[in-house]
Image (cartoon, rainbow, N blue to C red):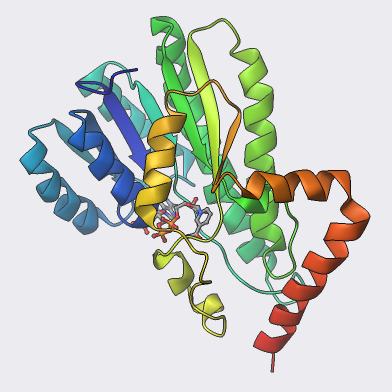
Length: 265
Ligand SMILES: NC(=O)c1ccc[n+]([C@@H]2O[C@H](COP(=O)([O-])OP(=O)(O)OC[C@H]3O[C@@H](n4cnc5c(N)ncnc54)[C@H](OP(=O)(O)O)[C@@H]3O)[C@@H](O)[C@H]2O)c1
C-alpha cells in the first residue's frame, strides 16, 4: 500500500510509539486520525503535523469505553468514509505481583489493551470488509510470548491480543483486509512513568526508540505476516522458549522474580 492520501487511525497517539507513528505516516502524505484521552496532547501533535499538509482529525476517546469508541467511529466514518490502516496502539501496564494488584487494576489493563482493540476492530472492520481493503496493526509486546513475574496481567492482555489476531487473520483470508501484530521489546517512552514502575531501573541498555517501532508499524501495515517482533533477533528467543520451555522459563522467571522482589524491599 502506498500511504499517500490513505487514512490512518492511531490509538494512543498522544505519546511515545503512537505519536511517532503518526509523524512517520504523515511524512508519507497519509491523513491521520489521532485518538487518545489527553486531547491537549493530540492538538499539540496535530499542530506538528501541519507541515506535512495532510488532513488530520483529533478524537478524544477512552478506548476502554465501548460507547466512546462507537461515538468516535461515527465521527471518523462521517468524515473519512473508511479507514485504510487501523493501528491499535493504546495500552499501559501496572507493575506488581498478582497478590499486590487489585482486581480493578488487573481488569483495567485488559479493558484498555485487549477490549479497547476489540471495540476499535468491531467498529472499523465492517467498512474495511465492504471496501475489500485495509490493514489492522495491533501493537502487542514480547510480553505476548513470555509470561513474566511482575507484569502477569499485562502479559495476559498481550497474549490475548496475539491469540485474537491470529484467529481473526484466518477469518480475513481472501477478504482483502490484513492484520499484523507488532511486538517490541522495551521502548523508551512514558510507558514506565506509571507510579508502579517507580522502583524499577528506568530503561535497559537494549531498549528501542519509538522511531524504530514506528517504522516496524509502517512495515506491518503492508505485511502479510501475523507478527513482527522488534528487533527481529528476539524471534530466536521466542523460538527457544517454545522449543525448550523447561530450560528457558526458569532462567527468565528467576531473573524477573529477583527484580520484583527487589522492588518490595
Ligand atoms: N514502552 C515499552 O517498553 C513497550 C514495549 C512493548 C509494547 N509496548 C506497547 O506499546 C503501546 C504504546 O505504548 P508506549 O510505550 O508508546 O507508551 P506511552 O508513551 O505511555 O503511550 C501510551 C498511549 O496509550 C494511550 N492510552 C492509554 N490508555 C488509553 C485509553 N484507555 N484510551 C485511549 N488511549 C489510551 C495514552 O494516551 P492518553 O493517556 O492520552 O489516553 C498514550 O498515548 C502500548 O500498547 C504498550 O503496551 C510498549
